[in-house]
Length: 139
Image (cartoon, rainbow, N blue to C red; front, side, top):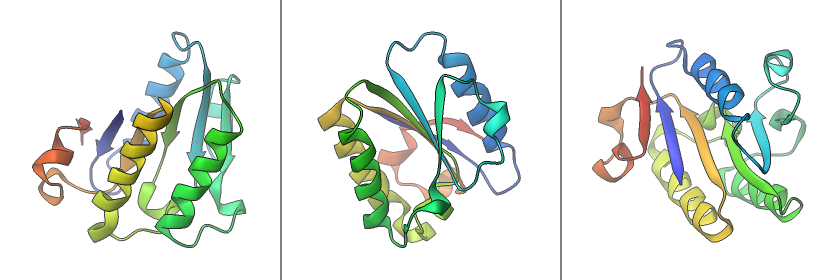
């Protein structure tokens, strides 16, 4: 399952994502990964959550990002959930390519039984009806 937290830049998506991951870690039996564009929020995350600073890796396209996510999954068979802040920056995707990468992540989610919670700087009007169904919070 891919869940989305959406809203314009500066609306508080990161805070909501951090609150959600820290709250849910208590009920998750597997491993949790938090992908971000830097380590700025390292001390705001529960120590059971693995923070990965994506800027340290050569992620220069959406396809490279999906490969990166797949590599993380291949190394951790206990991975249950992945949280991703700032999809467009981390995955180097423009607004018109957001749905394409989300569909690829849905395929990965279904195949490997990994849930994704992703913050994206878009509004509901930017999404198709299919993707609107994945929105859990719109700011």
